[in-house]
Image 1 (spheres, rainbow, N blue to C red):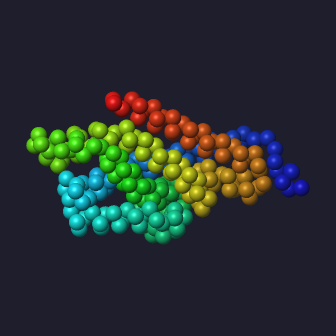
Image 2: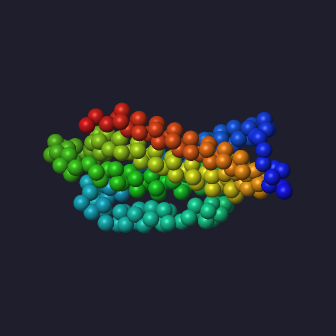
Image 3: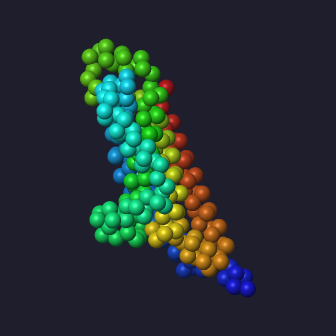
Length: 226
């Protein structure tokens, strides 16, 4: 009987909560992406440049960086959130709320971005790099004027994938006190047996993901001059 009693039309209060939860999710995803991409980009570039046969080949740095990235990608997000609570509190003063959720979201995304950057840069033909070296370009010039510009469309698509993954992670963070649509779905949809609220939060997440993907695809096409 309780489920039947609680399911009904969305009230103005719930619509307000839905709007607020959407803004919280956008805040978490946007800020964590802005942190993860600038941190993951140089890490991915280093992986490519220091690998065997790379322009800055280093048999010590590469396996260390690769191992760190692999470990970071191997930790489930829920476990990561709990494991770095002291670090989160040190940075933002709390482990609860949307701002606090940004810390584990960014930490989880950095190794993911690094691998995407590495994969994107490896798609560039080795002949292009050899031509730049033959013209006397330094490693720094090759990175800035050859590797990154050539891989820019792939990097944009990789950032799009990362952002979409963060949308899913943010919903998971909301389930354990991070706020956003995940928190709304648990507190009002699951705990109060409001199927309509659950469906609305799922619809919001789907629309968000579709919007991000369309924007990323459009920007990648604009940057692709091939």
